[in-house]
Image (cartoon, rainbow, N blue to C red; front, top):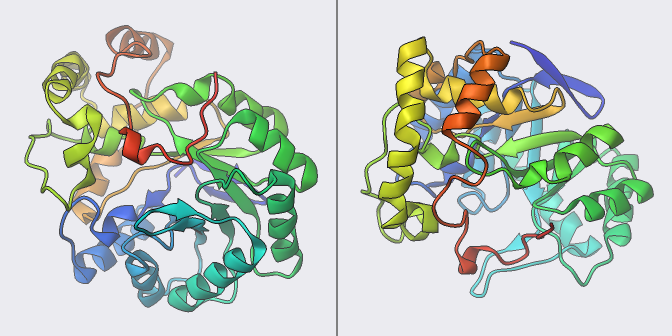
Length: 319
């Protein structure tokens, strides 16, 4: 698999996001998650992404049980489960969370440690200082920020170099193109794109609206509620037809488009199914293909916001 730079390491150009191991998209089980991890490693994926809040430690414990050491591993802290859900970026809390994550992961060190959401009351320079001390102590290889604005990145990077920024980015979520992807490029920071397949909207088959209320968070997400859901299916249908015509998998074409937006971009599609990994075969796109995809799915085509108001807390907005 193609390699891209993340901090001081080269990693697979596509990583694996493991949020679904914690059950946020519906029921899962440990055996299926372990099989998915095995299949990902066999496919050449070397960058694995988790967080303490994914299943309240479930995802980290599964990765710890899996135990493969020769990977680049990222985890996150900062979101405090509610009610009400809030965030903390103070040093004492970050250190507490890191030690708990390391115990679940069965490690003494993690390659990349993200602040999952920024706490506005804590100056980002103080936060960067905390993360820099963890790097110096050998607890983490580097640190990252998630769902931040370009200005936050620049301030943090001045205090202590940032290894990666993780924000949502896909064919139907283009906000990072309004400055953040460029800022990462200028600073030599990897941009890690989560939900590059639109939370399943760019999966092998069109989704049906059978999300389990109270379990699958898409059930209350604006893009997956009616009338937006049907409108989005209709908008994406011509792209699906193009993929069928060209012999691409839908996920493979969507991932190829993300990868083509910059050589410092690393998408981390998520799945709990080893079978789905086969659909991630990256399509070979040329400039004409990219232009046609963007004609069919222009920036801003999606119906509905990517989060509801109840999900937007502590997500930094810009532009």
